[in-house]
Image (tube, rainbow, N blue to C red; front, side):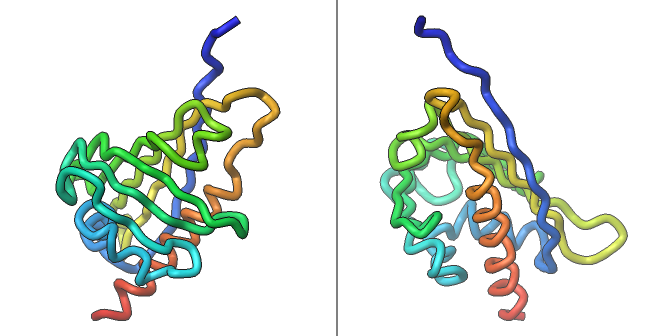
Length: 157
């Protein structure tokens, strides 16, 4: 039986002090700078094809998750500067050893009634089989990255 399994979704919000535009800019236009903010987690992001901030661009991430060095090749599926939103689809790498598909959407929105932002992460994925865990540790990982980027952005001012 070669039917597709269900697509699962995990979401998390992280409150930060930086503006939505500043945070979005890091992932849309400067992902190659993210490793400066959290080198213990992200070792680098290289432009594989296309140009920063454009749909269709392919980037190659090197990161450490759950104590292991990992890689991810991702294509930018959506960029919306007005909504401070970017979507990456994993097309190669360690995540595809456990997941048939994996899509990460990051959206930063103004915090209501206060300065700063709320970063909303959405992980949408299809497991290769039911024995695979949901990516809870990866959700914690991206929340920690958000906090590290925020510290970096707010120290620059």
